[in-house]
Image (cartoon, rainbow, N blue to C red; front, side):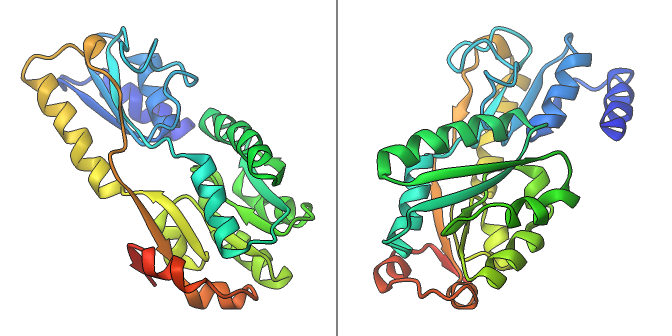
Length: 246
């Protein structure tokens, strides 16, 4: 946060015409300091809850962008497809990230609809991730779009492998690092989508009237070898549907 504050104050004193923020904490930091020039964000899960915009359709201020809000029910359904007998899913999330709080609440509700009990444990920094994961007695783990937890993904992977529990995440890079699967945002595609908004604003569009856009495409990414290290086999039908396999 101290680093963010220094960056934002430097930007505020500059003559830049527009600012871009990736993820919720940088977007919040920019929006608190800069109100006289446009801010375009990417990868903010719930910009309304984060206080960036009044609504997705009509932001109402100098801030707009793209959201990486994901269908939590579909993500939990991926866990069910890999592990049909799953009864409990554990989520470790950062209490300091409003996007993570919103996702965790959505996951609890989505799990209830699917017959899955979602258990949660909160952390304040990445050093707490392993202990929090170990505190959850669950059949599988699910990682949200949560910067703090993702930064300690190796800790989640270690616990999942030691306990022989499935680990599914919300970003493809984590699958490459050793998670079993993810139904995730295509972040390159989101970068291009965000660039389109930036171009329209540079050409004269008002951020206040420029709707926040949701991700246009999702990708299913799997890592069969990682799943095997967790004591599971990814079904052939899931492998066949995967957009990428590591």
